[in-house]
Image (cartoon, rainbow, N blue to C red; front, side, top):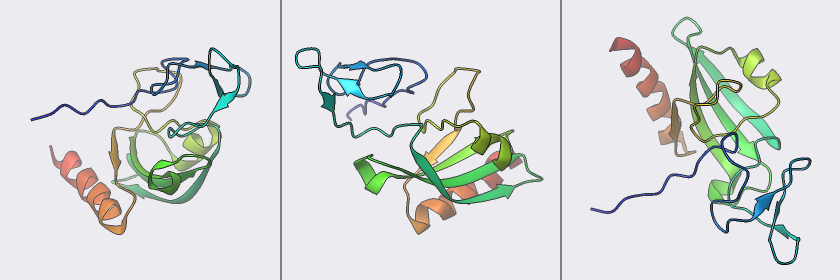
Amino acid sequence: MGLYKMSSSSYDQKVCDQCGAQKCPSCGHYFSAEKREPVRSPNPDPKRFEILTHLSLVCGLYLVVRIRYEGCTTFEGEKILVYRGVSFENLKCQGSLDPHFSENTKFHSPIARFVPTTEGWDMAVAFVFQHNRS
């Protein structure tokens, strides 16, 4: 059995998981140490996103969102995320949505992430109802 290395939240670090390049604090682009040129990252830029759809469940306690991250190379930039204890309006107003799990208390972090398909959306909704029963 192999281990899968999860990428971490941009809220927790300032270097690229893939190449170790430094992240520019003002624009968020990654730069290689040698050339200081932008490096295309497969990871989503938390400030460049569009919320495609959302669903509030269990009396507003859970929020399921489908997001497209501009420039992200995996799954055409789409992610399905589940949040707990935040409204759609508050999440949208955060201005930055990192799909990676984080313990940073300044930003809302997802509690689950699913493949961006119809089946993934259904699994996210089922997860909410199952999680709420526990």
